[in-house]
Each structure stands twice: as structure tokens, then as C-alpha cells.
Image (cartoon, rainbow, N blue to C red):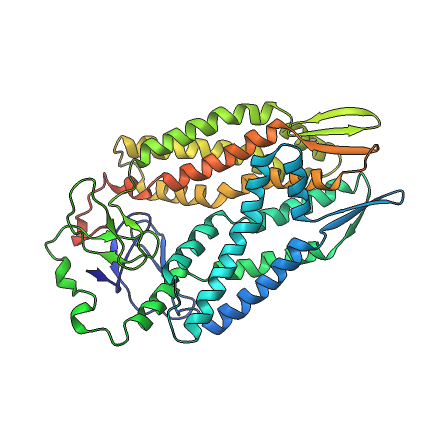
Length: 427
């Protein structure tokens, strides 16, 4: 049995009944402040049109050159996929695969699945694989990093102006347009599409198969909320070791994510260990007529600062130094306080968790700059830049900290707080 008119707060677990909202209104959790849902479901024609436009621009951005460098008549241009191929050939397969996933595969999955589902709903039917595709949209959205890549492209262009004449190519403008379009696409909540699909599937459903009445939750075990699609379902009371699955999307339902604290600590420990070589080892090697030069993350910050670009130096310093350390410290604080059952400032700790989730991807900025630089500076005997072991370690730090934030269940913050105030029900 499940309830389509109930919604559980993703961050603290409080249950609410959905109420109609005016366009551009937001429903927020009164306890932790998280956004529960937005008013006015997306118009399918608008979603389909913007998504189709984003796909067209995406193809241009991926397969056309981003920039061309000209050194005394010797020109070199690079596409994103070409730069990734160079990384692969230089035995940096792990970094190459990571960049490919974050900038090509995951955005392609999100856009393709969203367009397919939207066109089907617009035609008035629920397409095959509907639930799996929306789950894929949600997962791909967590890992897509087109906006971070765009900033990395701009930083690379500014860096290249000291080495060669820089000529913008169609891929550069396409990536700029794609970043803007994806900003709009991300505002389309997959859960709203799930509700539309439920409305189509419920047409002609026999009364005994319709969602249960609210009284079915009274006096029973606290319900379970699906973190993928948001459906609230009654706890079937299965024994330990048995899994209950969401009736809508098939995801496994958990009262809390299994071993959330221990998995978070394990990933944090791995990230903290790798953070040391990530900063000490070179991230790039420069081979030129003047010899070989090693560049670390810190030396890159110093380079931009001394070359008259303090703003860029500050951006790289924050993204590559401050953000990783802040994520490690913040997640360690959240894991420690939740493990000890602390009741200290739960709302502020929840806000800290949301901040960690938001800034996590921006640490990949340095990796994208390295990828594009390696792909562009290929002037044979004049100058060649290759990736160093520090890039691999830093990429692993970013991925591990993102996984750690995903493994941490923010509802654990509120477990030590009295859930029975004002007759609240929690999932």
C-alpha cells in the first residue's frame, strides 16, 4: 500500500500531505527548511522543447573543436573527446574515464531519458521502462558536471593566452549555451513526471487497487519513503535481512541507509589519505625547449596570481584546496555528531549537509583544466604538457568525497531529536 498524496522530507523524514501550490511557489519543510516540492507541474511541451534544444547543442559541443591555438603559424585544436583520448593514451585511464562520465555519459543519459519520457507523457501514455529511466535521470543529474567544465574551459583559455594566440571555435559557444540550457533542465523535477505517469497509469484502475486511505497509516509502523521517486509506502514489517521494494520504481526501501556512518567514515578516510599525494605530487609535466617543469596544484595557484589573474587564482584555490578540506571536515563533523546521537543544532547541521552536496562537484575544476591543457598543448618539439600522478590522486579525492556525502543519511541528524512533537509522523 502506498500514498501519492503524502511526501516525506528527504533530509529529516517528516511526513506532509501535498497541497496545491501556485506557480513559482515552493513547499518547504518547517523543521529543516528543505524544499519539498514546487508549484505547478512542468509543461510537457516546454520540457520537451528545451531538452531537445539541449541535446542538439550537446552534440555540437562534444564533436566540434572548443578552441584553436596558433604559435607562429603552427595550429592545434582540441575537442573534449580528443582531450580525453590524449589522457587515455598517456596511461591516465582512470582520470580519462572519470572526465568522460562526468562531462559526456551522464549528461547524455539525463537528456536522452528525459526527452524520451517527456515525449511519451505528452502523447498520453507511460512508456516502457518509465520508472527506470526517471531513476537514471535522477542519478545522472547527481554526477553531471557541465557547469564546472564550462568554468574550467574559461580558465584554460585565459591560461593559454600567455602561450599562443587563442581562437574560439564552435564548441566553446556550444558549451556556453549548453550550460544555460542544462540550468533550466535541472529545474524540472523528475518526481513531478512520476506523478504525471501515475495519473496516466491510474486511469481505469479498479477501486481495490487504488492507493490506501490515510487511516491505514494510523497506529501502524512508521511508513517508508522512497528516496528515488518520493513515494510513501506502509512498512510491510519484513524480517531482518528481507528487502521491501518501492511499488512505483522498484528501489529498495530503507528506514535509514544501511551502514551509513561506517561507509561514510571509510570513504572519508580514503579521501583524506589520497589528499596528501594529490597536493604534493605534480598534476602536470611541461616539456619544452627550456627543459622539463613540474606543476602542482599550489604552483598553479601561484602562477595565476603572479601572472596578474588573482581572481582566477582565488577560484582555483577555493575549488582545489578550500573545498576538499572543508568537505572532509564537514562530513567528519556530521558523521561524528550523528554517531554520538548529538542533538546539537540539527537544522544547522542539515544546512551544512546540503552545502556539502552542492559544492562537492566543483572540486573537479582542476581536473577539467588539466584535461583541456593536456589536449591543447601538443606542439611536438616546442612544448608538450602531460598529466602527472597528482591528477589521479586528486580525482580520486573528489569522487570519494562525493560518494561519502551520498552515503551519509541526513535523517540520522534528527534521530536524536524528539519526533513526536506536535503529533509528527516520520519516514
